[in-house]
Image (tube, rainbow, N blue to C red; front, side, top):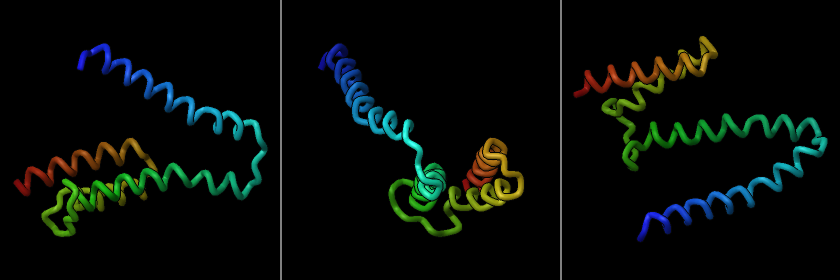
Length: 108
């Protein structure tokens, strides 16, 4: 495959993705949604982030690893605690990365 072909496929996928996603967002953004729907939609980003993080923490490498040899799980617990106390996403992320690196160094 040529690089032109690859870039053309990437560009067409971007256009298709935009064409499928933009119209519903444009239409819904002009509507006045009921308060329960707005409240329900406000939980979507947290639910998506939680599901992505849980999948990576509980299944590193694609297999469940629910032991104390799982550095992702060991780092996730104090990271969640730090976020709960500080409510700082950036601070908890940086702390979690440092904790993870430390745990990986200890576990070898």
